Amino acid sequence: MVSVRAMLTDLLRHCGTTVVVLATTLPLTQNVLADDPYYLVCSGQTSSVLKYDVDGNFLGDFIPSGTAGLQYPNGMAIGPDGVLYLSGYSDATIYRFNLETGDYLGNDLNTGTEFGNVGHLRMRANGELIASSLSNNKVLRYDVEADEFLGSLIVPNPSPHGLLISDDDEVLVASWFGNRVSRYDENTGSFIEVATQGSAPHTMMQWSPATPDQSKFLTLVGDGTVREYDTASGDLLRILINPPFGQRGSEGLGVSIDNTIFWCFVQRNEIREYDATTGEEIRVFADANSGCVSPVMMILVEPDRPRLWVDSDCDGVGGKAKIRWTNATPNGNVALLYGEKRGTMSVPNQFVCPGVQLGLGAQGIRIAFLGKTGDTGERTLITNIPAKYCGGFVQLVDIARCTTSETRKLK
Image 1 (cartoon, rainbow, N blue to C red):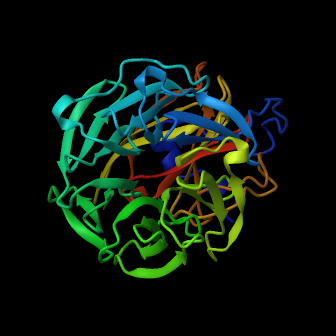
Image 2 (cartoon, rainbow, N blue to C red; image 1 turned 30 degrees about the vertical axis):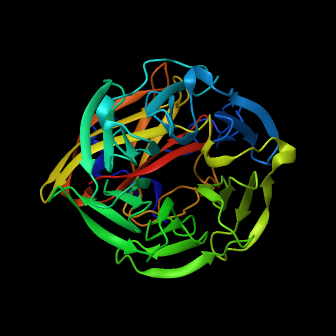
């Protein structure tokens, strides 16, 4: 681990930031109360969204059945505006809900003929929302804060469903009836094949929680297995989980706060938890006795976690970046860290927030910015990026809460 002073490098000057040592000069006790994390689960048949704590206790309906005409919800994403975006498969609409209360906000996203059986949703690093449109064989793009439809990508394989966004902002699409995963190449404006699976269609996808560098991804395929693939080559590495019931009837995958895998079984009204490395079952997380009806997919919501958004443009001589964070402690201290690679480094004892696990490796880690956030918990930096930092990663630490944001790549 490098020394504190060795961390204070050129990157600080390029951010135009006053150099302050991140050490015990900042108060170790921040007296900020924590809000517990929870899971939201799309219930297809009831057209509602259910809420569970991390132990699997049912907390009730977060979005009641049929709110605003919602039909068969099966995709969720959290935007930079703090809004929960929810897709309705049967009504070709993307709805907007308050992430804290579940209240319907109106102003739905809908592009008429572009829409058709909306599947899954993902947020890109720059805050752009993408959605799969199964019946139109398209991936739709939105600037949610500007309320602007940005156009669509035409997928070569029928019925695009599952979506992933890579560190390089590439879009990976699983085709339900195309039996393959394709990756969108921004340079050519076309899709290239990544992985195929015979007659077993791919549906839901997740990055493997066992590999923080996105070197492996998981797909749920039509024979009811969860399969692990090499991201670079597209090679099938193994069948991670076999069908536990000898039947299909499964729908979605999720990742827990402990980096385990959740598997939603629609027909059995169950969500089961599995070890991401061994594939062994850990427990039944939720079932019909705990309010679980027709679970389609689920996401983790961490109210105390800051959200980081990066829109960068790097080349061989450097670049520029717009770095924005939201949901941090209002007027609280934050640190933006830079690292050469993703990883699982823990903050050393000589720093504030000791023991907190980062999404960065120890190699080349530096403090890129240290200061106050705004009175709404938001702030935006416009900065130059020296060439040597292009390709690295940034992550925000909310010092008041000792919580961390997503890890984002400078690309």
